[in-house]
Length: 240
Image 1: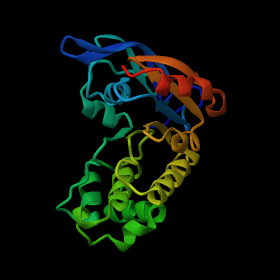
Image 2: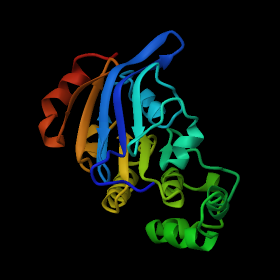
Image 3: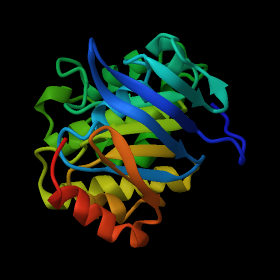
């Protein structure tokens, strides 16, 4: 998905959403500018993962608007979001454990205009360790390597918006730091990224903007250095 410099990669406007009769998001407004990293932070139960689910089309809002690259996408199936350039990496990674790295890339390459060799060149240039593991079953790799493979989907899909949910889950700090270096590199190449992360300071180190969410509402949005007080209040003041 190509992104105009003035058109947000993602915009949520007065979004309400939930599961059945339980409303989780209450008039959420959020903007992810093109080529930027936005960290969505807050305590457990705040509605962060539901926000990502709305942004990927997996949860349909009951009210409000969802725009991807300036296009109104409310009610469209998740496949339409993917075709629009949205790549979602859920908690748990979602790689095919019984396939090799190369076969994962081959599977994800269906529907793209690039050949497998072109995709491998692009991915392995960005993730050299995956080149070393290209014939290895994904399920036998380390957690960090599996997460690299999951993030590589955004490169394969030539995505314009990457949604990341807790990519640090269960990983050693050194591996988390390495993954976030890759996140920063992808953003520098023009990819817009909305990430949810349990380790706030890790996310803020690469974020251009931060949004603080509690009880299904965005309480504050700003530069990472400017939201310290709101962030502390969100984590210490209670959980939705």
